[in-house]
Image 1 (cartoon, rainbow, N blue to C red):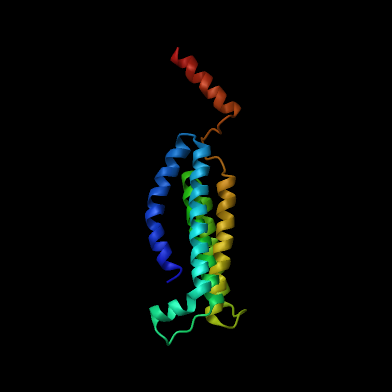
Image 2: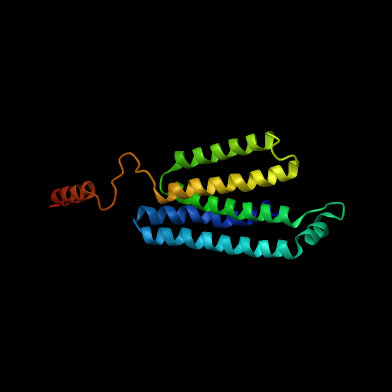
Length: 182
């Protein structure tokens, strides 16, 4: 519930984020592009912190209220899942940024790699408690995914045929276009 409910709510943000970032990227508005990503991640961090405080203060009681007294949820478990949720939503934001930058294959490789690592982690009983193993796997996969997508966002590879802004190639293209226009 802690992981899925925020993800469902985030879909509305995510749906509008990709077209917005793509437009900013296409128009070369790099400062606005980075500001949009930064503001979204800061909002996610604030939300995750609020959920974390709520889970710390009354998480087990809220879970029993929601699911019944037969279920026992420890604060530590709830905090692990909350941190994973914040990282996962941040990764989803960075994924949208990577897609807007044309880094589709690199982003997809990150998702596939992290999914495979999660499956391997949960299949190997390093941590004996199955629930804790899944919680730690979720947090770890979200952390690695977020870090990898952040690296792509910060250093996108130029796409084939794409000219880097401010490069000598861009200057030559502008001069050639001006020459043809006259």
